[in-house]
Structures are given as C-alpha cells and as structure tokens.
Image 1 (spheres, rainbow, N blue to C red):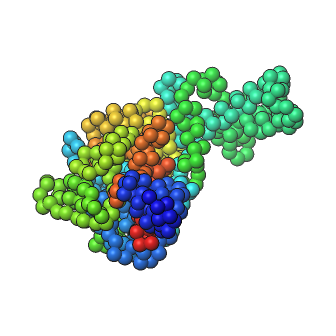
Image 2 (cartoon, rainbow, N blue to C red):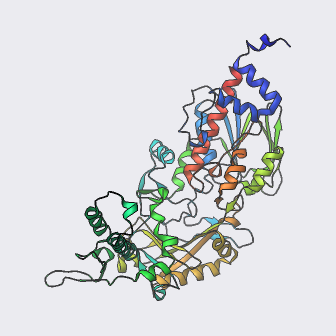
Image 3 (cartoon, one colour):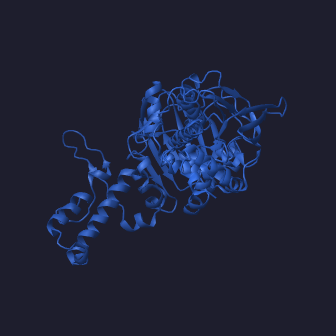
Length: 529
C-alpha cells in the first residue's frame, strides 16, 4: 500500500472512509473531533444556522412537543424542508394547558372533560420556568409570550406529617427559622467547648459566634428562644398590641419529622430557586407560538407505525388512530422526539445497541389533580399567595395559584406526586383521586374542602403517547445508556428532555433540539465540503 495516498485526503474523504468502516456513529465522533460539530451538544446555545444551508435537504420530525417544534423552527429558518408528525390533535406534548371543554383521555378510564369557568386553566404538565432556563425564555422573548412570576416557595405555605407535630400543619417560615436557630445554637456550643478548634484553625472565634447569632437569630446569650422570623401566635398591631411570637418547635421533633428530607432543600435546588416564571394564560402559549410559525408543517393524528433506514435517508410509515389510511414519508434525516416508553414498541430499524438502550432507559411516573375553588380561601383566611404546601400523604403537594389574586375563584392544584406514590395514585379511579385530594386539602384548610369543585386529574403513565412522565436517569444509566442515545443511528437522531441534563424540564427538550439541529446541519455541511 502506498502510504502517500492518504496525504491528500480531504476532511470529507476521511469522514466518508471512517463511515464506511465503522458506520455513521464512528463518523459522527470524527466529525466532532475535526470541529465539524460543537464540542458539547447537550449544552449548546441556540445554533446559528446559515440561511439556506439546508436547501435541498428534508427532515422528518416525529412528535410536535417542545423538542420537535424547536427543531422544526430552527431548521426551517435554515432552509430545511421539515415535516412534523404528531399523534395527537394538538402540538406541545407535555407543554399542555386544560381549559373549559378540553378533555383528558387515560387508558382504561372514562374521558374527563374540564368544566372550569371561562378564563381559568390548569397546566397538568410543565408549569414553571426557572429564570436560569435561558433557552425557553429566549423563545418567549422572541415570540412575545407574556410572562408573570410563579411563586414556587412561600413561607406562608405549610408542611404536614401525620407522624410529626401531632399531625398539625406547620408554616414553612417556622420550620426553616426554628431549624436555623437550633443549628446555630449547637454550633455556638461546639465552638465554645473547643470541639471545632482543629477545623476552625485561625478563624476569628468572636466573629464566628456573631455569624452564628445572626444566622439563627439567637438571643444575647447566644441561645435560641424563638424568633419573629418564625411568625406570630398573636399578630402585632397598633397601640399597645406588641403581638406574641411562637414558641420554638423542639429540635428533636424537627429532626424526627421528615420535613428536612422532603421540603427543607427544595427551594435551594438550582432549578427551583426564585425567580420562577409562567406564561400568562397557560403554558401552552409557548407551544402555540411555535405552532403559529410552522403553518402547514404539522400533520396531526399521525400515528407512527414504522421507522426505517434508507441508504441515504429514512422512511416513516404512519397512519390514523384506528390503523387505516397508512401513508409513507421519506426524508434525508429523522429527528425522533417520541418518549422512549412509546418508541420501544414501534417497529423500527434501530441497531441492536440503540434498541437495547431505548428499552432500558428509566422513566418515572407523575400525577396532578386540579380543583376550581370559589372563593380563594387560602388568600382570604391565611394570606397564602402562591407557593406549595407539602404533606407526607399520597397527594404530596398542594399548589396555590400565582395569578388572579383576590379574584372570585381560582384553580388549586390538589395533588402533585411522582414515583411510587404517583403509580398508586394513577391506578385509582378519578373519583378516588379526588376524594384523597379533598381529604389532603382538609388537613391544611379544615372545613374549606366543601369549596372545591370540578376536579380533573392527569396520570402521565396512563396518557397515550407518553406512558410515563419524564426520564429518570441514575449514575449507572447516565454512564452506560445515555451516551448511546445521544449518538445518531445512521440518519436518525433522538431528541427530547430525556436526552439532556434537564430531564423533566422544557429547557431540556429545547436544548436537545438545539443539539440535534446543529448536528444535522454539520452533517449536511460535511457532505457538501
């Protein structure tokens, strides 16, 4: 063999040789190494695709959720012919808002119809946007989707545990303040006793003690005796009404409770920190904004039956809900955003490695239930404006609305759970779910459960075309399965929240769409190089 024959190889020829030897997966890695792909597609910013760069190339996009809509919008602007196939009669996927007259179809259950008054709505899927989710917010800005604050954490909301504090709901402000106070007092005692000398080194002890004092609102003797931060037993007023603070909860009771495991760190998580946002009028405002820019590109009621590879493209077979009117779509590339629990049952040409990974990807269940309430008793009686109350019971969370303050009525989320609790909740009839939720609300608001009406619930594991809520990677599957699914199989690319480090969030779906859009564009450019 003449070694000099390789000295004049172009990058395109080299990539083609690698592709012939190891398939497109190998060529894909080489393209990335040659700088033809972004280094880290999973975290890519919106790719800047040249207008016209996709002229003459077509993309079949399976699923018109946020990932599919984003990819179609980006690639369409670059000149690609994009064709979206959506099983439902609406776009958005889990970016879904229920209003009066909308229906919920779960496998094995009677259809539910939303009966809320006009102007009220419920987001059974995505419901909040962290301020650090710049990709989603970027499209809200570009499309003019109006936003308002979503109150995620509220110190007036409560925590309830049947096995703690006599089952009595405790305000979040007291739980957090008393915990900080007791910990600060313990640290003062440890510092005074010299137990921390080695760890503290040359740190100024006096300054440290005052740090603890302010952290826990300790008294002049560096003891925690309660704090106004925890709220009041009698509210201060005018004149000779100083008010009376709450007696602190016993530290032993706080430790024995489960609030610190479920609730204490929730709002400290990066993705749960204030400020949180929501679209005015419902989360589906985002999906509708994409949809309006993709007129004529989405085929609704298109149930994908086969995903096939061709020598230089893909062939998709789809039909209607009852299996009639089968049609075919051929394209140069495919972006498949179908949730993996659904995808694994579709007849396809995925290679063995991808097929195994698709079947093994872990998902988690989740359920939500909403009520219409008139009046908004949580505001009138307790001054709760937004936020979440937590319980150890099956319903797990109660969400108070972050809009429509002081209105005549409002939507109260009477259950939001996930994991095993969601599996149990979702197995119940809709009437049983409502009864459990009503009982849960009564724990926090005794006597007010009679104000609740028109319940509607969604168990995502029972929803056709989802069959679960969202991906739930653990360290092992992230290492062993996740990388496989992030590689294309021939000209088929997978995308969605499940192929990001923002699983369960719209941000993950959008960034995943950015990644595969950039990868396809790089592939096309490499072929033309």
